[in-house]
Length: 77
Image 1 (cartoon, one colour):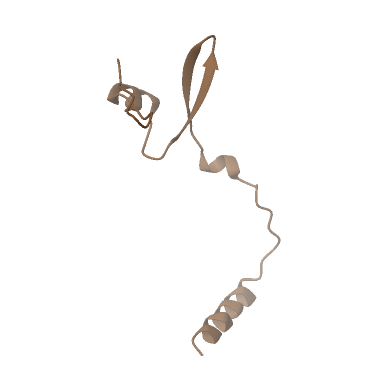
Image 2 (cartoon, helix red, strand yellow; image 1 turned 90 degrees about the horizontal axis):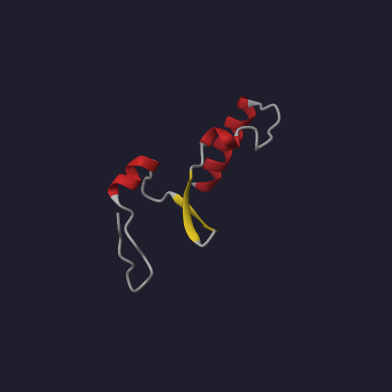
């Protein structure tokens, strides 16, 4: 398979490669040089890998709702 580089150094990833790697629009690609060859690796960010990365405490849903209502009321005064 071949692709052509444009004047802006862009290229199209062939369809077979996109499908095999499971690439979608806006996916991130990592480029590496290994023994004089360019290696392209898709960076798949899985949502669950971020689990527990944001620490939260116990919540009080009633006070949260009341606070949201108060803020919304102040916004429309």
